Length: 412
Image (cartoon, rainbow, N blue to C red):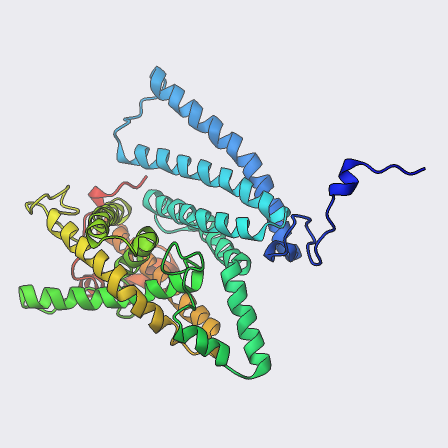
């Protein structure tokens, strides 16, 4: 005689399509590609091996400094940067372990969120390595990790997957009514949760960066012309009318203020002033320790902080944040949606590769400029190339707001 248990009565039949048995049918039920799972294994193993090693190095260094076993000046800039680098690598490695576990467990949504969280850490690793050792093979690991994480975040992100599904469906049906309806309602690219205004996924973030690069450069150039009566090249990259500082600033402001879009303008103003001032301070500090470059100096101005930011420009950042969130962001999202549907991703890929090459060439040009000013003669095909095509006179003319002093850098 068969007996039934309580579990037999309460067990619910699995929903059709619920392959992972979590009680709902969602994107996590779609199995990840084999290569993504292999990468999950690699980052999991790498993190498990790296975290104990970095922890041991950090503890041993702290003990040696506290006991006086090493003669390191704890206030030395290079020592401080090295400590920050170890800490960032430790946190990043720990996060990679979690990221690898989610990849192996086929948790797409969680893996996408962790990928977006680790991307800034990979950028920080690369920036610290650049500040300590300049441009070289040391940048290959963080750049490779950044490229892989960016690719995976695009593959894993549910919002981008839904956009690609819609694009494929419309292409098969050869009609654009659904797309046009989404654009007309202003919903394409909007945060589906309603907490923020814009969906913070790769496509939106990249085009916010691009628009910020151009818009910021135009505003700064006009401001300088109006106030000082002179035309000055304010570009921040070797090629094109781009100022990546404003591009990054647009992304930072959007990410930090996105959930405040319904808030009172005064709250947005205060938050933007603090965020913008901190961002401006960090950029000035990093350019100095990495290349000995001073791009601006606010010494002597009202509420000047080490000459890197000031009360005047924090007020500017505050007004910019209000205008950006309340007025410009909806119109910029509308502008992004004007990108033709059929070339939406191909155009993004082409422009992204161009900006990546542009940024890499600019960093190498800065590094070679730094070397020449330091008294180092060109000694390789790369340094000879930049000495010939982007010599000191060219760099001074292209980057008219920048001066370079190697003694102020924090390199090893």
